[in-house]
Image (cartoon, rainbow, N blue to C red):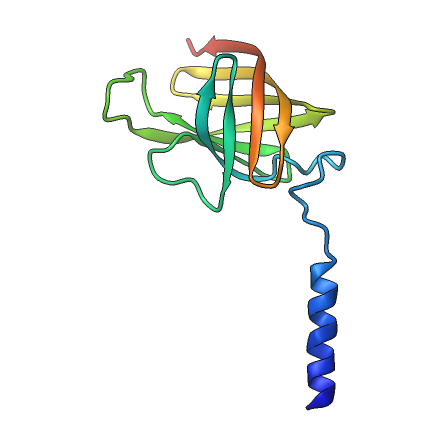
Length: 136
C-alpha cells in the first residue's frame, strides 16, 4: 500500500511539471486549440479559449498540423438569426504574426493577425491585412 501511494505521489508530481503546450508562443504552439470571438475591437478582436466551439458562435480551431477551422456565417445574409458553418483553412505563425487562409461562403480570406497580448485563456489580435478572393 505504501509503494502504491508513493508511486501515485511521484506520478502527480511529474504530471504537474509538464509544460502547458498552449502557453509557449516561442514554440509556435500558442494558437493550438479552440477559440471563440469574445469581443470585436476597431481593428481586431479578442479570442477566448474554449473546449469546443458552441453552435452558431464565431470562432476558430487551430490544429497542430497547420490546418484550421473557421466558424462564420453560412451565407451572405447577416440578418438575425445568424446560422454559422465550419470552413476549412490553414495557418502559420512567424514571431507574433499569425497568417491565416480560410474559406468562407463566397471564396477565400487571406489575413495576417498580430498577437498583441496573450495568456492561457485569451488572445488579443489586431488585423494587419485582410484580402477576400471570391469564387467565380
